[in-house]
Length: 358
Image 1 (cartoon, rainbow, N blue to C red):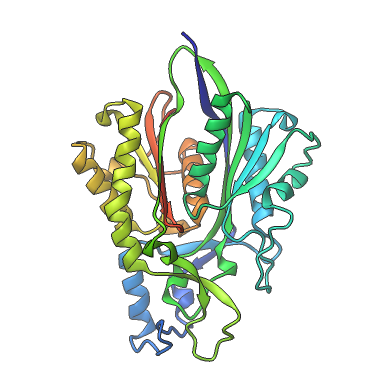
Image 2: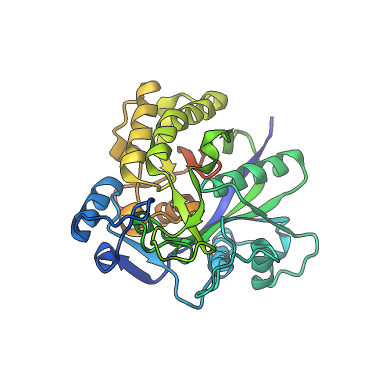
């Protein structure tokens, strides 16, 4: 019996060249949501931030780049790694949250779509190559892979380019402590149909959405600075509520994906989770492995890149996956046949997970 599998055959990433250390926020004046000044010394604010998130530095793009540019750079690497003819790509699926935001401007630009811009930058001429965007919060790249898998297994596509790209540095409020979390970056993957004697690639997936009181845990809002222009809005989040929501719901979505796959949880080699917050990610995975009685230590199971790269939203998972495959993450490797999981949570609130055989 032959299985039609959705397999990642090529990966690429773009890590911006500009390093922003925590110390560079020492000049910022931080305010609370009620616009009152934070009296704590900035050095103490930064130290507490590092303890909670694990972030020591993040990467931001140079002034001349936008999300579509870095998405195309990562895509070029993925195409080269896969060794394919770009004109054979059936779909270009780009996940992001804000589109192209030019340096010094305050508007998101999504007309044309980021995916259409990427197709243009890649100089793909084939009119049957269909580009479109997926707006799904931080889980966007995982959702794009789920989308590609659905098209491939339905016979409607054979080869998809799935990208996560974001320039969050353009939409942060420098007077909000949370601005230190956010980063820029892009990760790309070629997902294609491969027939084989056993199941491989995407084995199973799960998805969740909660849009009652959770819907505005991540949203846009005015600067916390009392003299700011209320018409200009920045990315805002309720960190405590997101932490509690994630700890309650993400392990369940991960467990559902494993149960759908029929794979023994003990076979799981890696969990590549959205790099949102070190403490939160560790707590999610700890609860998940406790529920499934997995004995593998978290340090062996869960590679992290947040310390150096920060939270680049949709780009964290494909970037980390690419870095591991290319031997750039110390003490972590992925070999052929390994069972891995991709899992994410973000604005919506949305959650998803994929069980994948390398």
